[in-house]
Image (cartoon, rainbow, N blue to C red; front, side):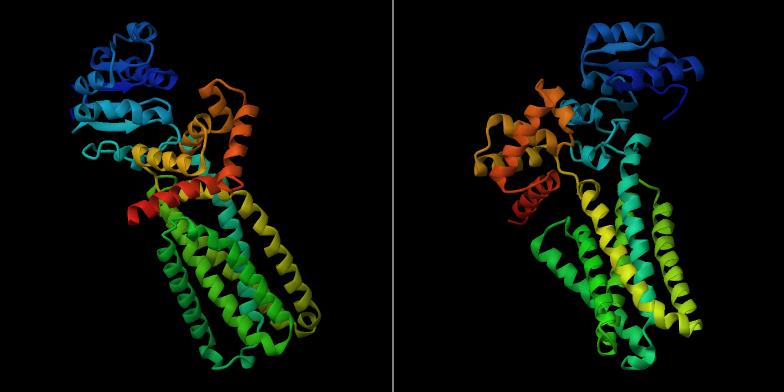
Length: 401
């Protein structure tokens, strides 16, 4: 594409698109006549295009036909509706989205023959920040606690002595295989994340075994070593998914995930080495320190549970509009959802908040919450993450069948 002759189109011409077009014309010397735009309100669109010398058209297909590069700048829930009719016209065009919250993996399912680069606005990428901090913080705390326990247990109390670490690692590999088999059998794509709280519980159990005395040092050692091995794998997988989906750079994901684990190992080992170098102190402080770690591990389960919806949303594979709609219609038929309840579930599945749903349907947030509560009661669930999970799981089972 030659920049001197390139034609740029905007599907949607709101504040962001106008700012981009204005910057091109006023600061980059771009010819406004090579800009074409469409929007829902044509009269308003013409008024916005006139100062720039841009061309106002009625449909996305017209924008695609008149452009070499198409910029999608509509609300996320509108993307499928505006792109689908223009599918043929968009074939072979370069398409970039600035629709907040939309990953192009989803857009690509609308028109598979169109080149879709991954471009996430900063506001969208920031959605991953809080869940990322929770997962990293949890893994760091778990690594400190687990490697303290691994290092503090006297190796002379373990069978096979110096080979104990190897057998513990084999135990971790075995647990990973078991998790993989379970996830494969259930075909639940969100199961991986749900192992995090259970791994915390396993770590707490290993400390409980340690506090019960020397007779339980062996199971405590092998259990905690297996758990921490899985923590490392899951954290790398989690960052890998975020990297692939465009929330963080791949290099950042690789380095950051490994750094948290290694830092946790270093801190846990350092504490244990200090205790070993001061036997008198270790004799009175080891058990209280273990109890403190148990309390801390129990506490980190709370933010994990609170962030469950956000994390599962980030990790969940995108569904096409048609398949998602089909699943929700089946859900509505199975549980006798009303038309309004079905409509609200559709919007929730697209990522709408309660306030967004209220504005879209021109009803109050209180009414939306009432409908959502009725849906939960009919389906037998308690929160949004379970609803999204149910829809995804239903789709997985359909695909499998």
